[in-house]
Amino acid sequence: MFNQIKISNKIKPFNKTIEVSSDKSLSIRAVLLASQAIGLSTISNILESEDVLSTIKSIKKLGIQCKKIGKQYKILGYGLNGFDLKKKTTIYAGNSGTFARLILGLLVRTKKVVKLTGDKSLSKRDFSRITEPLKRFGANIKSKKGSLPVEILGTEFLRPINYIETKGSAQCKSAVMLAALNTPGVTKIKAVSSRDHTERMFRHLKLPIKIKSKKNFDLIEVQGLKQFDGFDYVIPGDISSSAFFIVLTILSKNSQIRIKNVNINKSRIGIITILKKMNCKITLENKKIYKGEETADIIVKNSKNIKGINCPSRLNSAAIDEFLVIFLIAAKAKGISKFKDLGELNKKESPRLDIAVKFLKMLKIRVERKNNDLKIYGNPYLVIPRTLHIKSYLKDHRVFMMSCIAALSFVEGGKVIIEDKDSVNTSFPSFLKLLKKLGAEIN
Image 1: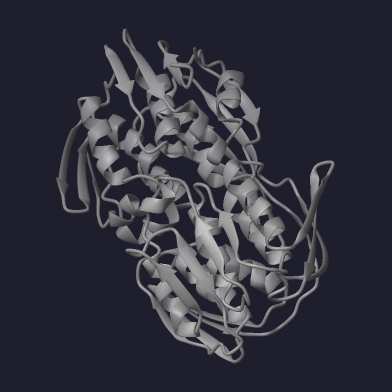
Image 2: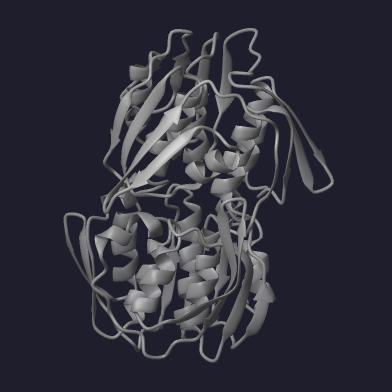
């Protein structure tokens, strides 16, 4: 009862400037790479969500010094494989798939057994896609049924591998790249194009990496055993967090928003590309390059003539965390929207593709599903005229936030009760506070 909210009114027109939470992907990667650097790193504007705090707590348990001073985190690294373990150690990843998968890549040389655990949701996710390539490096890994808990014992006799990544998973690719750092020789990766934050950080830190981008995949080579110095990094705003406010603004009459200093890495802005194709009003201003990453202010206006889309599957990876709210736009659009090859949605914190279909049907939207393909028949006059109760879905933070945006956009005569408000602490602790700043009435 105390972990739920009720929304009974649409949000009123707004014209605001906001800043969203810092980028989670960059926060986790910056902390992990700082733990492998030689000397002191200073990371500013870190996202203090449960996922990132799990990362910080875990590297401390692995022997890395990390202190918060003001709004900065000071991390003292001892170089590659600089973890200091006296005995078998258990670390808890919470709900963070990014941290859990990437840390395994850094543990391929550990001299003591490390046991990795997670919460109920994370423990249902597939880790064989990570553990199998890491075994090929020479690490000793034990796991029941390819899921958590996982035990890893490294080796001094690592060997480079040739790895093919076919799912468009940046987590898999990054785990192999981090393992390659500790491995003599050249590790070669052929990967379907996906988020490239790790590659950009490697380049910024002057780590020996070569990248050739082809039409549908990237060829990556990493030369191992190259030490690097501590660094300073300021984390920009998160496009995934911005997505909820982008969609709310598009669906809210006479509204406009400016979201300041957001990471607009081209491998992350699939939502902007897709929504522009649907006739939504989105522009980028104040573009800057910061240490290999591009940032900008995102300006969004209410859009009245939204049209359906035949969404190219090549955009899936760049929008994988935003499809839940993209589907809300499709639900309001004129015409039919088609999406293909969305199986990776069911590999997230919860089976998001299954949940999206169920949710849209609750809104009385016609949805046709064939395997991992969807057809969504939009209704420009969509409203919620009755009571809806959105129950727990493995405490998935994005399902909760998507439900809030739907309620604030479509409620008209009804109300929406949404469970698991604490789930936002996983990635976006200030989410409800920002909604209220825009004028949302949330009980």
